[in-house]
Length: 136
View (cartoon, rainbow, N blue to C red):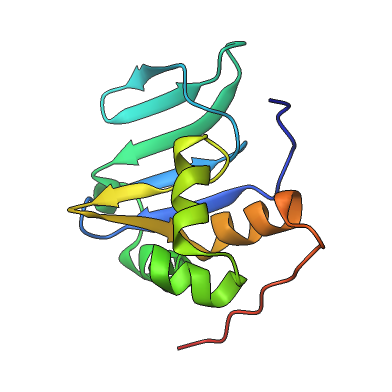
């Protein structure tokens, strides 16, 4: 798999109080290293940093900033992602397992951010599709 540069994403998970800077969203994580207490770097198989994560982010960043990030990092279930993209939930699930679509598991559900879904659709969709997300 070739790693393509995509728009970096800054995501905040309020439940986990974790801030993530995603640099290469389609690269599988080979290992995670500790930068300092509570700050971790995900590396790909070539040792490149593909993401940085800050745990207990509310200790380091203003709440107002984190709130704005929460609002822009819209998480979707696979059913919701399928409706937005026109790609079946089963296909999206397969793409998660093939490391083409980055998602997180919450309980029994896979969750994908609007950012990751848009990147996936732009890169892999045939014919090329576009996704428009409306503000809630």
